[in-house]
Length: 152
Image (cartoon, rainbow, N blue to C red; front, side, top):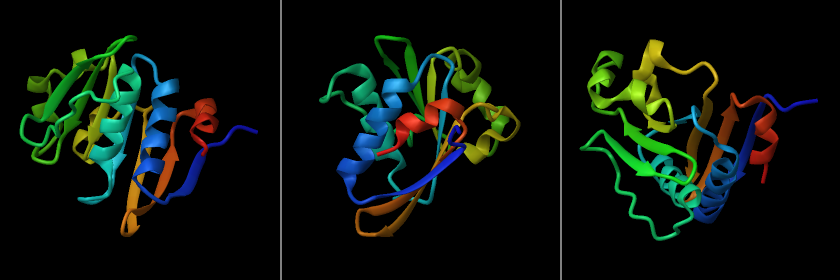
């Protein structure tokens, strides 16, 4: 029976990076990964590890898009866009950032609640929750049969 959702523990940064690498291995153009959680939950660390794995470049420079709001990366399979929507008031501001064009590739979105009606229905939702130190729990849902590839 297919897995609809997963909940497990990420004991350290290496475990978060390994999850990101597994997601990068099964991601494809048109995918959206919605990274949820409070400040310091590991959303940017996940996005950085995902982009490095997807690009095949472990040294890829991946700055936080907190001030630029979006960063684009050319990957072998497509272009990926990393959005940080923390400072946006809502979805109407996404048009200026090239949201529709970015959806042709892979999008990683921090603070996805700002998407509102633009939230892709088939997105992978990753909810990261800090527990103590680098220990986090992660809840994932939304990728149907590909969910099993995300298991540790």
